Image 1 (tube, rainbow, N blue to C red):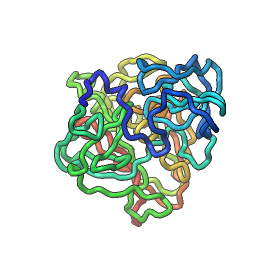
Image 2 (cartoon, rainbow, N blue to C red):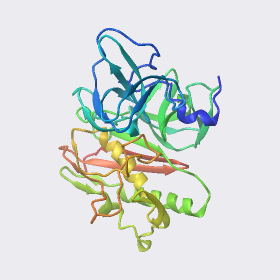
Image 3 (cartoon, rainbow, N blue to C red):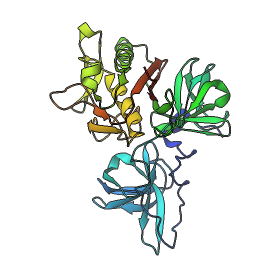
Image 4 (cartoon, rainbow, N blue to C red):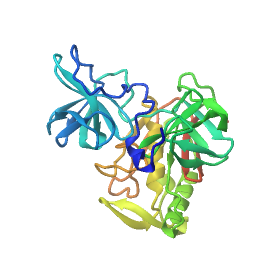
Amino acid sequence: MKKTAAALLAAALTLTLAFALPPAPALANTGPMPKAIYTGVAQTSLFIRTVQSTEASSVGNIPKGSRVHILGYEPDWLIVAAGTDKQWVTGYVLRRYVSEIRQIDETALPYGTTPARFIGTIARDTQLFIEPDRGSEAFFNLTTGTKVAILEIEDGWAKVIYWRLFGYFRMEDVEDLLPVYSPETAAPGDWIAGFVSFYNMSEEDINQNRISNIKLASENIAITMEPGFVFSFDEIAGPYRGDRGYLEALSFYEGDVVPSYGGGVCQVSSTLHNVLLALPQGIDITQRRAHGPSGVLYLPHGVDAAVGNIANGINLVFQNTFPFSIDIETHVQDGALFIAFRKAQAR
């Protein structure tokens, strides 16, 4: 059944991440409640929804200030359980209304991580669909030569995150497909982490300036990090001035959207941050600040990284603690920003 564009943000009843549960039942369950993978604190009274939509029916409520029992997450929603072992329900609450998230299951991925399993190149123009089905809504065009970091492959469909929903395209339209290896098993030249985010392609001058800034910052951070190297985004990508080639574009500042030189570079730092999250061992993030409680819409909630002012601590800083060098590779094309790490070749 086809879905309209208006249903995009409510259409996450698709394949879930490996640690997420199927769509939540509307009826209460009995027996032991599933163990939490993460916990958090409700910032407001939360309705537990049966599907990922604020218009969906509710099967329960979590009071403000209560501990939230988290079973998994998707780009804009948490999968939660509430109740007792005698009667409990599972369902969905928005990520933005839960804070102080703490990991309970030490074997789980760090909260917010969406690791890529494969990296490839689009071989011919193809479309992103809202579901792994050609009959579903097609909402974005991937152009030939675009680099992509793929979360999963199933039944001939590749899965990526597009803003705060999942998108799917046919694997027959991908070439140069390679796996992402764990750092321990990777050989020199192998991919060890990657992420792709998507940006607005509006022809308005101020948005074209933003795209120019994204391209320039991406070029600046494409370096090799030796073991022990401390990467300061503001120092390497910046300073964000006209004499460095940066243009005036819209950016977030103290909760407002304002024009500034270098507007758009935060999408580069935020995309890079998602690459770092996939490497909890070997990358030590020492400084990172989110844009605010709502985050930025071009990424899953809560995984962004603001940059732009070293003096005020608005920077992304991390250290390569691996015993080998890492090549940072970037690619910006037609709405897609790709950043990935390779285990560096001996030089």
